[in-house]
Length: 136
Image: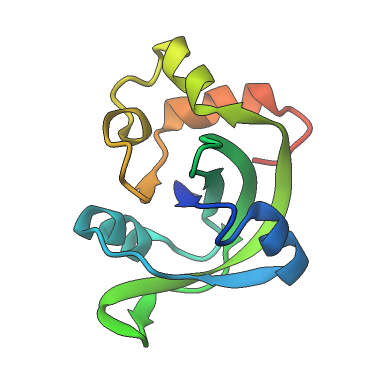
């Protein structure tokens, strides 16, 4: 299983929207580097949902439920389907990630505008300790 992080402005599509909808198609990705992450996703992979737009925090967890495919609205882009799994309570803030200095080489810290990215194993280990009751 691989892990990814996908950013969304909560005013556009929030973790609560995903919980309500149960599933969604994750689309609108433009950056070549972010598209590379989307195209690497496979069913059963996990995706941390990150609220951007002033919140800057990891708020939930979803599961990839489809193979990546070409976005029908944009043939240069790719989409996957996600299923809601959990809220993360309390959310993990970007400030906590940065002040730990454990992940200074992670794209979340280095490339703040990147919308979708792989999550390194050391981050997964850290998050599993933060949320022992959640099956990450």
